[in-house]
Image 1 (cartoon, rainbow, N blue to C red):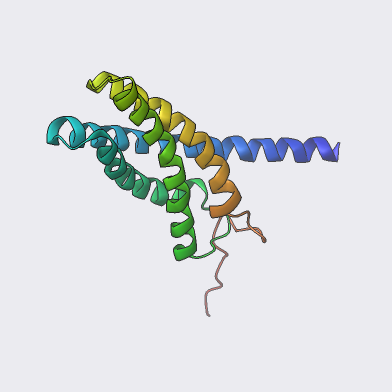
Image 2 (cartoon, helix red, strand yellow):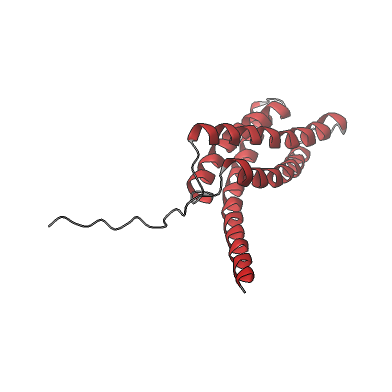
Length: 158
């Protein structure tokens, strides 16, 4: 019975984290796609450079959302460490997007905005699987001691 309860608690916590991660990711995706189209279609910057710029902006938003909301109950191992690892892992995930966009643009010669956006969706999807796994594993570590949900009560002086 204990194993069943622990398994249920682990699964419930995972679903809770995954849901929050999905909300932050969806908002970051909207930012990423908007910036990608702004830089590539409106400004006229190349698709790969546009993707890198869009990812830097959306990843900055995602870091704040994940640190302050999704994984706030996890150990805080230092802003510098987390930020470095977060952007290193996002750089690796960015490679998925760059490979797909590069393949569609330069190999298939599909340069229209619709093709670029479909390629972006595929690349972001692949990168998202990697990011969720890697953030939980290396960036936002499991708490070693329980983090209180509420602040402790303070006794008032008489």
